[in-house]
Image 1: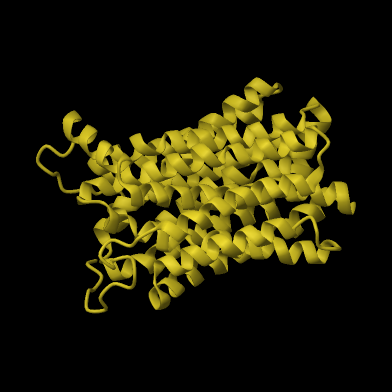
Image 2: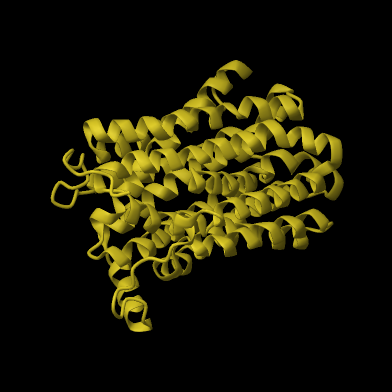
Length: 396
């Protein structure tokens, strides 16, 4: 529960641009590519911090979330007090560094406290924080923005981060240090672990799946409100509420993906998610009417998160040593966010060039198609990426 709420915080920070974009355009004249870059910079920072965060989590466990919380607070405040693109960019980068530490820290904690057959369910529960964070961003923050501008949105986010951080660090399992592996935290051991992770073909493909889902899900989340305003005449609030269907569907997608992985195996769920996500991304600008857009966007949300729990539950199976779980998760995040960060910026660039929303959504679908191709060549390690033995029990 605690880790899920912390993940909610990181997703809330990611989703805020969908709320404040109109005001930033109106007051500061930011272009589409600049607005896209504010999300892309967040995603790049999110990805880059993953590896060092995972390495530190192997040594300090959930205590690293304290640093994550501090960065989210500082980044939110920097954005709130800024009045220039440079200031906004700095705030988003700091926020991204804080948010990017969450999953690499949660991964070894879950691997330590959950038996293999319980990991799908555990990750499915944690992943629901993604949908909840987006819902808070799209349903509550527009009202905050209307009452006090974008500055109120980011000050409110800083306050939420402070409360969640205090509650999380008050939990004993979060503060508990992992067992020390002899030599496991030396520079040589860390370097060897990172090398093994970077050369692991299955880890690279898991990173590709992460990239595809992030590119499609984040791109649709950030740009669909703008599409609804420009092409369907929706108000800022209505556009945000219609896009919130993506978050509602993600709440369903996370546990549905976990249940599907337990029944049919992890890779069938991942492959099906990649294919369906690609098709629905193409359909967003093509269907007639706002109701149809709402339905398709919701389907994007469903499929973009169904892969989540089977993908992360697979990490302990594809690495050779338990202490590699954190660095591998960080590496997967680095690959995913470091590559998918191009998607929001490319979408904005397409709009600046006058190519229209259909071309923008096709860019997102291209990322999804890459994930579908990766799923076709993935090979499970000794069959362990399917359902684990039912005789294994939760350890705590």
